[in-house]
Image (cartoon, rainbow, N blue to C red):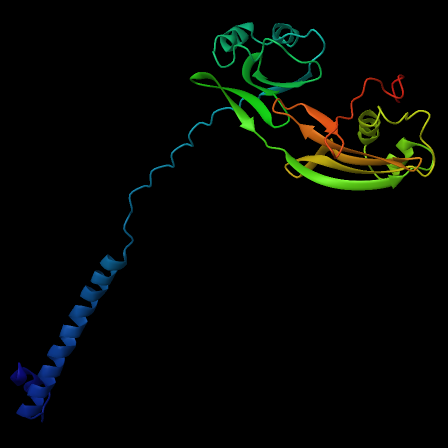
Length: 274
């Protein structure tokens, strides 16, 4: 090969011919490798087809919301649970089931006029009942897949003690109203001192009173005025005092500070005070 190059190029030395031959060999190698590298790059950069992603699963079917209806009933005189179920087209078989439960057997036998009952149902099928047993207790009956169950919810009362005083200008009721007290306080004062004072004829301007009484709250909400715990009434300059005492049976009665019952054989005003 160097001799071929030397003969092809007159005057070229043997050493130069060798150098030229080496250079030609390198150039040929480069030219041959370029297509090969381009081919490899094309193979590397050629996008690969990825497997098709599975379509998203359809959402699970949701259960339709069941609409419950609520009936609130204020019990009327002579109402019975059977009559209420018929009046509001509730399932009588559910009532029979409730009465078959020992803990509920007597709860629905006798209703009190004025009490509130709350029925929850779905198209006549009973879901629940709420009955207020007292100010602090509510009977709640609920239905689930196992049938009916009941429990008594405790909602205790909060008793606050208050003191108020007022002077009468024209009437006891006006003085009570000006002191921002309930009319019940006026009635209780008249009942407590009815054996000593005729609240129809004896009351006069300048009479005055002081009462210690209860206010009943539940969950921070005022419900009503409670009992009068103690009272002092000054009528025509004469002072009368009363203190409430509750016996073991829960019966309340008023006594004087020295322990004498305020009840006497006769009251001063035989006509009911109003």
